[in-house]
Image 1: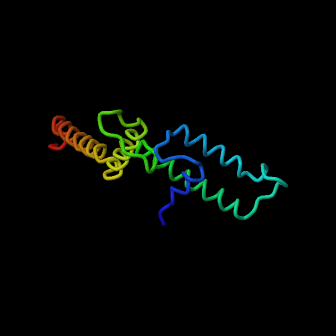
Image 2: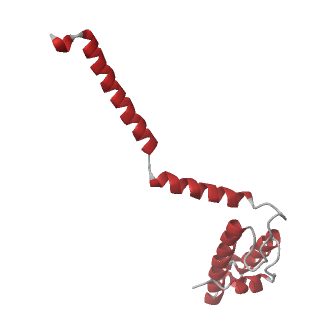
Image 3: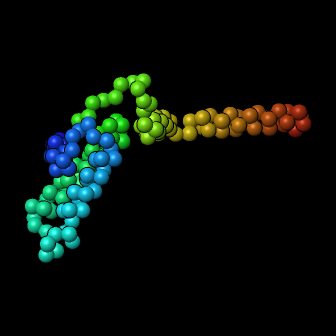
Length: 137
């Protein structure tokens, strides 16, 4: 089921094109209002607990979206050339690229080097035995 991010923006009183700083500040303020220790009497109703849980889940989804795409969900995508991609996006792409290639053939170049080294040692010992003449006696 897709998360309803319009609920998140409505609950925070923001528009999807707001800045990340505005988004984080509004989220922190709303979470602090919904905390059980801030409520009158110190107890939390089931509706408030459900709203708090949903709000945390939606914020997590929106934060992941921002880390991946460099914008909040619902905001217009940036055009290329206006600003470079966030560094985190480039690093994530690079790490995923390295992980994919390193998992496909673990240690293949080191295996080839080991086989070549063993073959050269066998050849060297064979040549030394021939040069010493011990095989012909």
